Amino acid sequence: SQQGEEDPQALSIQEGENATMNCSYKTSINNLQWYRQNSGRGLVHLILIRSNEREKHSGRLRVTLDTSKKSSSLLITASRAADTASYFCATSNTNAGKSTFGDGTTLTVKP
Amino acid sequence: DGGITQSPKYLFRKEGQNVTLSCEQNLNHDAMYWYRQDPGQGLRLIYYSQIVNDFQKGDIAEGYSVSREKKESFPLTVTSAQKNPTAFYLCASSISLAYEQYFGPGTRLTVT
Image (cartoon, rainbow over all chains, first blue to last red; front, top):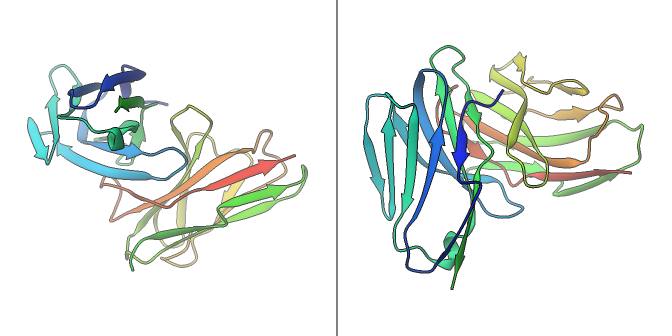
């Protein structure tokens, strides 16, 4: 059962532009995590945001969380060709504990 | 050099054979997970383990089995009962459930 759903499914931008992807979920969460996956590789954890936090930054990444709308967004500023990857959100809900992954957004950054 | 290792990277098997995928971590994490990923899709949870000698079914456990006899190791067996076993398999671990997960490089299994 999927908890998080990313939007859009695919995003194509030019190098230097900002990329925004969204994640919506259905039930109350403990935290929400964003991961990156390069083609054919394992996932790499980017940011974890707790349910009582509204915004977090890490380098060129900015994550927001709106628990009233049950949604989160990941913003990548000044994108680079190396940011080309699939990005997944994962939610840990208050009942199950374990995290559930969405289907991901595929980002292509053209040089 | 800490992390999670999965072996082998590529695995080929004939239909009807059981196959075991290896996953080892030296991060001292209590929780470990197995996911299946099909082309262009997200991750689907097969099994997870919160602690040694305990494991729980995920969303797609049918045709798979696991063991957790040691904290560092969480092998996955793909049995002949799994109808469509060809996929990319990812192992992960975390300090405990609900924390960020650390992933291995994956094993691509092809069954013909």
